[in-house]
Length: 180
Length: 213
Image (cartoon, rainbow over all chains, first blue to last red; front, top):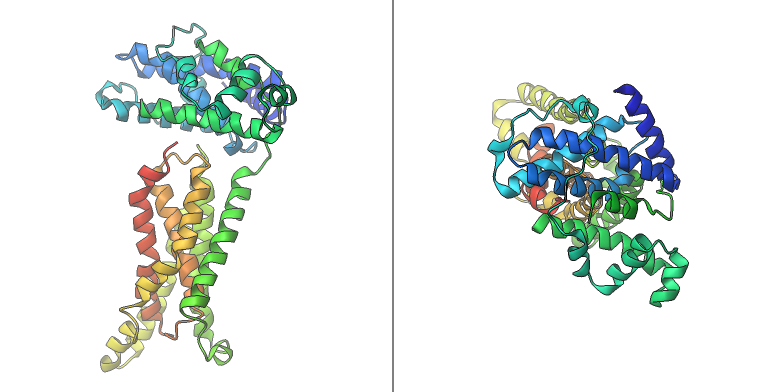
């Protein structure tokens, strides 16, 4: 438990400093913990689990600037997962599906589940609905792996507009998920 | 899109995140908010004409210290409430302490006064306008604090909104204290506090709508 806390925190801190492989490994491992954490709490809504894992990962990414390295990662991840879980349940008005108490934050890393089921929500379809100035930077940079400079050249946008487009586009994607 | 693909998309990160993002965001917001509140005060009210004499009175400084202490407590509260998983710790005590202190002082003043003077000590001559003027002055800070929070990740939205409102109210009261000529602790402990609580209650009500992420 505390071993995974230390390792994950180290990966995240390196990731926030710009180490993309460390960030990738951190998100990968977090997704397994989140999946197990959410699956235990959504016993009656198993189809929601993978969508919520994705929504929580997106939130973790968008809000990664709110993580303070001096803070336990467990508490930060738990608070985000819990917020997204309660938000989803409130949206669906199925609070009674809540079996386990949500308050024990140490449980967030208690179990890990790497078996992703198919997400029901079509993120790629939602992406299509974004305006071009947000969609194109995400498609070129994030999906095709081009650099900021290459994306800027391909789209005719400035480099700062590309960066802003990615950031705003991901936030808009999260907002679309919220309104679903 | 499969979760692994999403992770790959998110992790294809091009730049580092700047540390202390929430502190910097609030510094920018409160700078602009304080500027707006000060400007509003300068346009609508101006400082009291006898400011030079008033600064020699201890009560003038008490009147500034009360909202200043609440401002500091609310600042700690908004910073903590804006980041997931950060505990409030001693913040409730920091909010309660200035209120208890001013009420204690007010009680002492009221007990020492003759019974005929007590109404005047509580009501002063501006009790009708004081809370609303403080709330009005807090508007720029209120907007700025909510803007800062909307870029962060509060998980208790009503409490976060209330803290943003208290921050704005305390800032408004601090500026208003330079204009207002009331000097009695019972007045400060009642109407100043009410003025600060108006934006706080408004923030609690608006928080769950405006601060979602």
